[in-house]
Amino acid sequence: MKYLKGLMTSITIALSVSATMAQLDITGQYRVKPEFRNGYQQPLLASELPSFHVSQRARLGANYTHKLFKFKLSLQDVRTWGNTSNIAIDDNGYLSVYEANVSLFFGKKWSVKMGRQPISYDNQRIFGELDWAMQGRRHDAALVKFRDNQWKVDVGLTYNNEKPTYSHPTYTLNNYKTFQYVWAEKKWTDFKASLLFLNNGMEYIYTVDSTEYGAIYYSQTFGTHLEYKKEKVELTGFGYYQTGFDQSKRGIIAYNASLEAAYKPSDKLKLSLGGEILSGTSQDPSADEYNRSFSPLYGTNHKFNGYMDYFYVGNHEKNVGLNDVYLKGKYKMNKFTFGLANHLFFANAAVINEDSFSPEPVQMDPFLGYEIDFTVKYQFADEVTIEAGYSHLFDTSTMREVKGTNNQTTSNWAYLMVVVKPFKNYQPFK
Image (tube, rainbow, N blue to C red):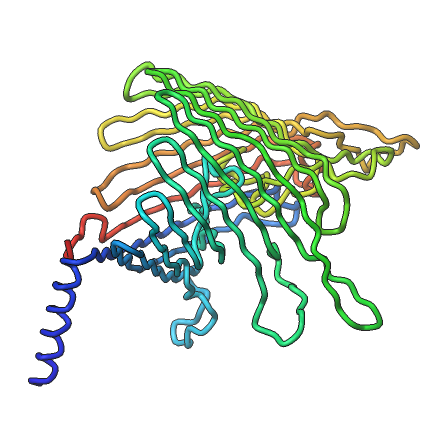
């Protein structure tokens, strides 16, 4: 007992001494989200019924900051309620490492960050941490970072293998094999602009005489993100171009462009009008052989093109693309924030009616549907938020053709989410 007391005293003293030389922060989050899904991500088949489930995420981590380095570790448990029996041994891999990285500081402007980490830039269209998804998005990467009062510059790279081997292996995971990128941002008083160049490598696996080999095909994405803010007016625009080859060595010619104007008549109300174009590949058999479908790659795609996630959230890749025209509003009242978004969806490339008896390809109306999203968030405490949402999609026969479904009823989705950050204001070692 005396030994235990002495050990605890020593640990306390060590932490206290360490805190005078550096900084230790504890991080954590609990998130629970019940969802009702009736045509979420795609219309239900006529034989399918709506679903209901509850998912949750628990994260616990620590950041240790020294004047010469920073160490960050974050563990997370992601699960659906009931995915293990109430007496089963929980050995299905729901506990994982979300972040495990070290930053080395070379003066005040330069640093190197290595390890598992989220990567997020601008409005998260190409690179985003995907916080909406319970598991989030993280990369095993190395970054060289520069920061001063006006400039931010990052150079990043990664190279993936499934495990250490003695000979060159193939990479079979549904993931990139390697990428290299440069991102730079400059700020002015009312304006900021960034440039991104990403060289993305996907491995194609083929077999010769019963032996598997891998070939890496690279695509290039480059473009800019622009923001202007002046008093009550905000203007945002971005554009990207993709070239190179996809995973099947098909040539890529694709683009993405967006423009949004926002007006804030008061501190409580914000109105936004905008549109986005993501190029697509025509279904017409006479079209050329290029892959003209833009891929947002590693972005937080739930933020864009409607909350029902019909586009680019694990779907709609190598498809007919999308033209999205939207009108959004956000209103704050005391501890409440209300949001309303309206989307009109159109196919960017030709959709062919597969049920037509015509000997020639028959193009369908490009209008895919209309979606309305309503959200409300309540700040229960500084560490606790409660959020609810309801979305309704009025689709068309063109949408059902694109999604390959035969249900002609409308689709809707609802959720309730509670987020608790228990250590947000907890600073025991400062």
